[in-house]
Image (cartoon, helix red, strand yellow):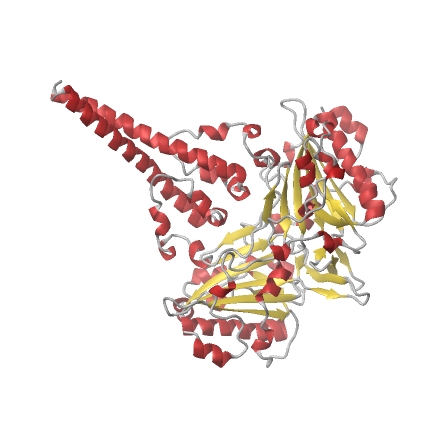
Amino acid sequence: MSVGRTLHCMFITAVVSFTLGAYYQHYDTLCRLCYVINNDPYAFHIKDKLYGTLRFFKNSMDRRKPNESCSCLPRIMKYGFPGMEDLRVYDDFVISYDRRNRIARWVYEHLQASSIVNTTGNRRMAEYKADLGIPSDFRVNTTDYKNSGYDKGHLAASGNHKSKQSHCNDTFYLTNIAPQVGEGFNRGCWQKLEAYVRDLCKRYGSVFVCTGPLYLPRKSDAGKWYVEYEMIGPKTIGVPTHYFKVITVESKLPTGLPYMEAYVMPNKEMDKKTDLRSFLCDIREIESASGLKFFQGLRRSFFFGINYSNVPELYKRFH
Amino acid sequence: MSVGRTLHCMFITAVVSFTLGAYYQHYDTLCRLCYVINNDPYAFHIKDKLYGTLRFFKNSMDRRKPNESCSCLPRIMKYGFPGMEDLRVYDDFVISYDRRNRIARWVYEHLQASSIVNTTGNRRMAEYKADLGIPSDFRVNTTDYKNSGYDKGHLAASGNHKSKQSHCNDTFYLTNIAPQVGEGFNRGCWQKLEAYVRDLCKRYGSVFVCTGPLYLPRKSDAGKWYVEYEMIGPKTIGVPTHYFKVITVESKLPTGLPYMEAYVMPNKEMDKKTDLRSFLCDIREIESASGLKFFQGLRRSFFFGINYSNVPELYKRFH
């Protein structure tokens, strides 16, 4: 065989084998992806995005009839999921939106010393605005708070997101806003708690905060338990009875355990001089009342300590 | 060149090219998957499963430090999501579980004529049982309903799932159970509605049903709106004020549009003779009160008709 012809053959072999290899990998991944999508509701929910990760070849398995697949998911959910907790990812915090009560279920922030100290962002430049990413039926407008008697209270505090103006602006999305009693709460103890979180961040450098509403039941005269809360505005926004913050402070030591504490405050007027630490709360009570689960998969022993009632003791022992 | 040597070269070329092709496809998919995982919270939630779909090569991008990625998601959600609506996929229906009220948010079923007519399953063989897939803090036990004065009411009716005993058993998971007034509701109008759904299925062959609770606000004497509902048992299970069913009947004609109707019933004792059609409700009202969104992405014009108040008219025109 001539060298030219040999090279020609080798070139064709290379191209064919390359394509076969790519197809083999494609097919193998597709089979496994199909399995995940047909059995995991979260994967099924975003199946178009996931199939989109595979290029070059046709995703032929996608065309199988729903009934032929191994799970009932594609068959039963043919007309879409009626709801999956809305998750909204902003530049500097993440929100889960409660479509029923039209306020967040929780807001998760990660504060770093740089974002606290640097104050490029100015809250006077920011304006309350509706988040157009929320379907219009569940979307709150500023008019919904008008004459309600409640403050438009921040869940992710604007003071925590000042490293960029855009981050500060994001905190003014109405998805991050909830009805709070103004005097004695939003402009009182709650504000003190927010300042305390920023103080922790300045000391230790890295703090995670999860903030959210609670609708706690109370006992009636007849001994039965009832949940009762107000709804305000034409869009019927729920007014939580309480608010919580779960705070995780990361140790400066590379091997140090994080420190965690949790607060619950009633959404009512309180004496500004009330000691913050009187609002300390067992995280399990917050979990039980909110239906949330914090630090999933981490054991409680992962933490250095929980809810120290004595501040000097905390600062002495935690680095 | 000898033929043997040429074949040897070609074999090596083939193997190398095949591997390169597979690696190229792997790397391309991995890059796109990384992007999806870092930007979509649902993908991020199941990232280990998704990375697991790629085999043969190391998923090196997974090891990038969270801070280097393009989105804030991996950084902020380092300690996990506090909650994403629990989706439970059973063999014959799908449930979204409300951890806060310890009952389902919605239950989706697809009824086919075969599963209604065939009655292998017997509800006398089934027992109420806790679903161990729900974290213990939010898991309901049969004792929680004891002495509450409420029935353990099915959301997905056991009569709809009789094609196999295991399907019938699944409907007795306490995730599919909610507190219902017994006499005059669960054993009255609600039961009639369930029978009506099965009747539709026998006529037309394929029916989708979504069932769930509502907690409707009522106006106080002072003109303010309040949500109020009871909590029962040591696990504090919410007692809904109303229940809804959204029913979609598929046409027998290959090109026929589906027909849709929606019902809302108060969770209280009612006269058994009440006409079912007096409970018909605009689906948008259910959406607004429940925070759910049905038939996402489908326009209302997709349906043949909505909420016909006249039954003979419906049966005459729908095939």
